[in-house]
Image (cartoon, rainbow, N blue to C red; front, side, top):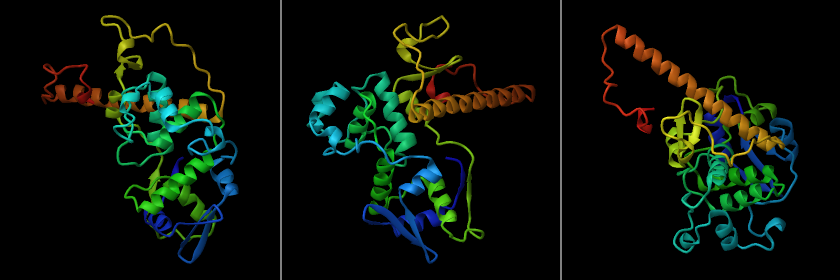
Length: 278
């Protein structure tokens, strides 16, 4: 979501956050703030429909246990009893991409985006087997958890700022942050799941044949997004690829200009395939 973010007001919103009959309430500058299902629909375009797939005891998970989900999704059961914070080691390519969308775009601002929570595991399972998920509840629970933990990283700032404005909070003298770019996915995080940047885009390393034009392996099929969520995910990765291309073009121009001015960039001994060069 793009727009203005009033960081100080967002912080006050989370500090005063409370739950009344399952609805988020807060109070800022004497104005009572309410975020109910209608607000989610009007501002974010999200309907409160589907299952609470991220909750262990929900109807969609009634016959499942965390252990069964963990084994089926990660194919790495040996780590189950060792650590409740699940790493991405046992995930296949599709699962890694889904998890990164969850941890970087939908449920962001955690201490470590490269470690999955139990909630992530259940959501991964729901997405894989196409269980209709109530994303309003998922995001609301995320906001509640952040407010209760007094977290230093506060997500959904633009959304909350729009809620405050529409519900009558005076913001004209507040310091604002203009958010005109979508949530960024860290380059190092993409490398950590086995992706590598090539002239044709991002590919998994085992899909790249040395000395030839990088192309996906034959088992990949054309993905056509059907749901709004899938279209959103595809759009985010498209924007990410376009931003990377612009950055690379800028660096190339700087290097070319530096060479003309006699400024050395020490690129002769560098490894072109090293991820640290970005």
